Length: 166
Length: 220
Image 1: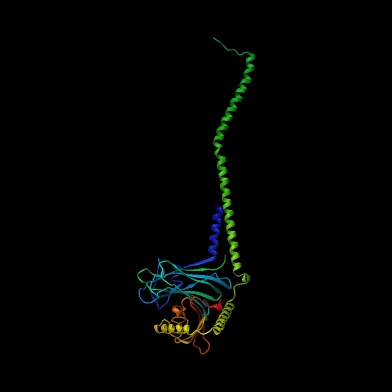
Image 2: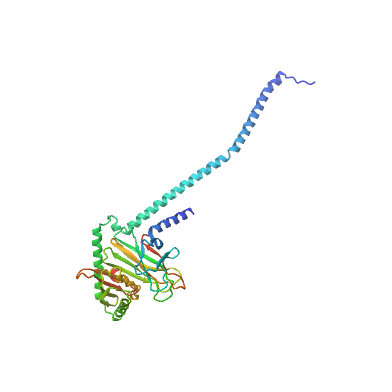
């Protein structure tokens, strides 16, 4: 029994070593910003960042990931953006993209993923593995659909970042 | 009246008897005290053993905690070693080294994509679809303050070149490169872009996009 508890604690400790989850709630205001052209992104304890607008188009949110623990020249990360898409109308999906940018702004890689249909529960946009090296920055851009009135607000739930270790 | 009279013989017997009685009494008293003492001392060995057992358990806990932290530290060390064993002995590179390496990587990525694009076979239908959506987006203002220099989509890659019509529109603020994920033709695509400020001084962007659902194969 004691051995089992020890192993469970060890697994917990190792899990926390290999996974860096970035709860979006803690990023809002400091790491996530809305584009100046959009004013509908609101923040609340229930939804985190969500689109409060009931008309117009999708609203844009940028989140900058602070990866202070990058300690090797080439590092593989696996990134999943968890969202809710509660707008059932076509063309009003959640679209998120991950931007791996050169530090000097000369270019970079963009991976784009969208939800395919609305859902009451959280959907994971799995961007898979990507390389991160010194001198690159990672930003997550999400377009959130407007409030449709039927199912609730669409929101950005969290950004999960995992890197290999085990 | 009957009178007992001690004779010399009876006197000689009385002394040993008294001694025996005294011994018996002493024995009984000692035994009684001993019993009493034992009765009061009996819990003491239990308390001691409990304390010892408690100490042993505490020591075991401390050993387990030490084993746990040692194992965790060993695994952490192993993780960092395995993450990049070839770089384990390298110090953090300087800012100049970082910039040089980033530029080299970027140039190599653009070269690989251009080579792959040249080898790709043309696909007019995809080109038309992307061009149509670009036109719509520019009419609606989703993509703004840029002009399309060229647009050519082939079997696996699309190449688009844009230039600024307003300062700063390619990289930020307006609807330049950052608006590309809004276009449905790029939904679930992978895009690589480079911004060049050489030449006539007007920033131009060269964009390579994969087919929806596919990755940029040359960069994998």
